[in-house]
Image (tube, rainbow, N blue to C red; front, top):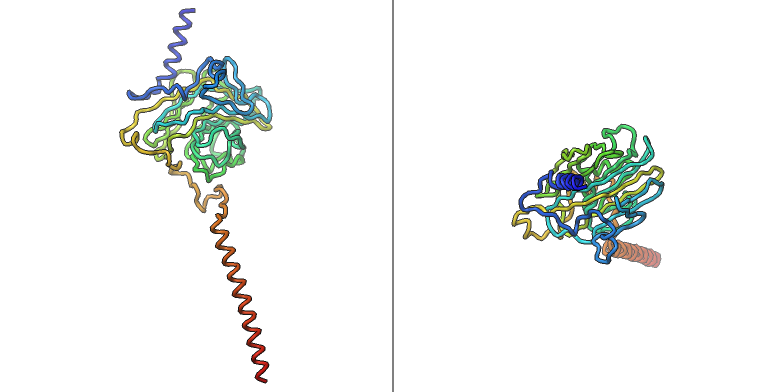
Length: 322
């Protein structure tokens, strides 16, 4: 028993620290989650909320079971107040189906948590970052990617996620990753530091990170929330969260002092709010615009009526001369 405990501790240490966080970094307990879960959710001071069909066992937190038409979420209650961070998520996606299964889950960093919707169980037109762990290709023809697929989407609230093309036109970066149905532990690391987003995975159970992608120019504000959500439709899978380790990374003095709460999420390849973007949210008419249009219509009508009576009077005077 003693030797098993030592080995378990060593494995946990490797999982948490193989991906170096830096000398000035440390784990933030408020944004982390490990077993036993019962002690976490049994108190009113819990830092996490469960939504939808999510259930908690002694081994995992299941966002959805391997059953059709289910949706669930796991959301942190505490906003992220530091500008640079890294989150390690141990998860498991599996089910009885061998060929047709879905749909996957999302790791969120968003302004509005716990909002149910059509994007893997969460809201569309979200504001923030979504790391989509997609297991099913809705668009089968002419596809350049193989599933499962990990993709990053940055949204300022103006973009619509299109399930029919798996959000392909919104993807900032992505990579193929065989994370479904593994017998080994499966982990993903998301690092955001100095406006660079880096995704790494460990799907082989070797405590070794493999880089998925790294992209600069990602602007994200502070005081957003971490969360997880999943949904099943005609296809289904078990989507389990096993542990979450979140680290505050070392930041420059300038970034620490900067007020980043008002930053609008943006990415270099995301065409947000552009007139050329067919996925943009339909523009709504403001009260001022409606008032201006109504005023112009009234003026046009009055001018038309004035011209009508003027011409009528002119014809009347012309007939008196003869």
